[in-house]
Length: 133
Image (cartoon, rainbow, N blue to C red; front, side):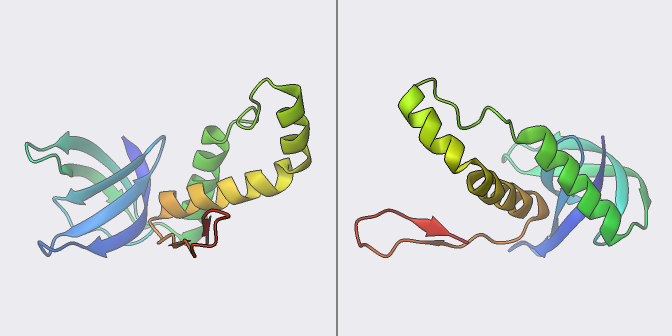
């Protein structure tokens, strides 16, 4: 597989945990030290404890723009234009009016997940649900 390192985090076991974006998003430890935005070619291995480890075959220094482009491609490929359609005219007409804002929010969540950045969800117990940033 090929991808771009979009985040680097330290785990409790002191291994670095990398988020790598390619055709899919892989969150794994590595046999080599990688840097943010590195372009990598790797083999993915799921260990007995359920953790994911990658064996890096090739790595090259990358840049922030390449990472941003990889995230944009991933978001575009995974955000369906029919996502909000339920097939009930009354609901579909209401969600159609909010489509732009809902897709913007969905894109922001997917971008955050793909880049490994934190997402904060607030629940303030006033009966109208949850919100997030």
